[in-house]
Image (cartoon, rainbow, N blue to C red; front, side, top):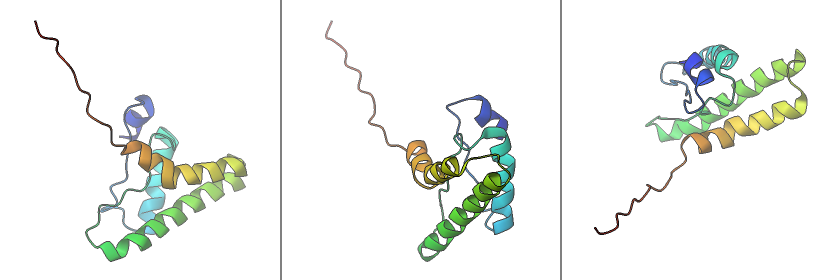
Amino acid sequence: LAPLAGAYPSVRIGAPWWFLDSPDGMRRFREFVTETAGFYNTSGFVDDTRAFASIPARHDLARRIDAGFLARLVAEHRLDLDEAMETAIDLTYRLPKLAYERRAPEVTTHSPS
């Protein structure tokens, strides 16, 4: 799916967290998908858990994994610190908001004939 998300601007890829619900799984997802699709063709961390008490811990872990990934890119001089900080905000707030933005349905009016 990552190549499709990288090629088509309307396609966003989200992580299947129910399969990758571990630090190593989250790291692998971020490494493999970001290389092909980039950051901005993903939907950020979107949780589908029914265990509401686990939501804060799961989101905290996802933020830590993404921060570690971004820190590695900064350490390798592949990303500037200010770019990494902006990307972190995008991954945690802007991208999920954009991917799941609610839009009002378009209303078509027909004039009487």
